[in-house]
Image (cartoon, rainbow, N blue to C red; front, side, top):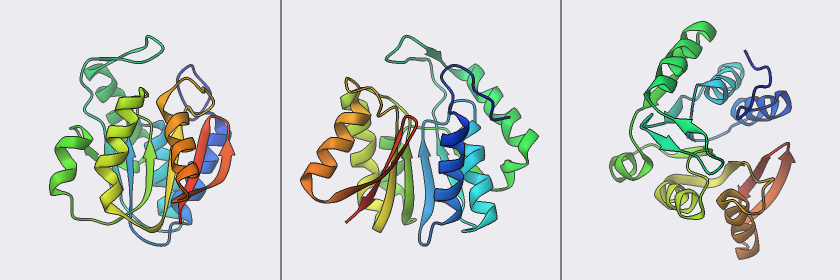
Length: 182
C-alpha cells in the first residue's frame, strides 16, 4: 500500500509517521490534508502499535488545485475510504471532512502530533497551523510535508518557527521536517 507514486509519501516518510504516532506520549493525532489516506494509515498503524491515540484526518475533499498543478477533489475521498477499509485503519482514523478553520473553533481534544500536508501556500499552511496551535500540548510534535521546496509555505513556516525559538528542529526525512515545541 505504501509504494511510491507521484505526490504520495515515500517509504522512509511512512516509517517516520509510524514512529511519531507510535511514540506519542500525550494528546491525539491530527493530520491536515489526507488526500487518499496513505499517511493517515501510516499514522494509524503507528498509533495502534504504541500510543493508541486516535487519528483525526482533516480533509475537506473539495475541488482544489495544488501548488504544483495537481487536481484534488471528491474522487480522492473514495480512495481514502478504500485505503481505510483495505488496511483496517478505519478503526482508528476519524475523517473530519471540513477545513481547519471550520473544525478548530469547537475542538476540545489536546493534540500531541500535528501533521500538516494540506494547502502548501504560505497563507494556507500558516492558516492551518494558527488554527491548530492553541490545541497543541507542551512538547507537541509538528510534522510538515514538502519542506524540501524552499519556495513553498511549509519550509517557510518551519524556518520561521525554529527562528522564533518556540520550536526546535528534530528530524528531516525525505520531504518531511519534524519540529518539537519548546
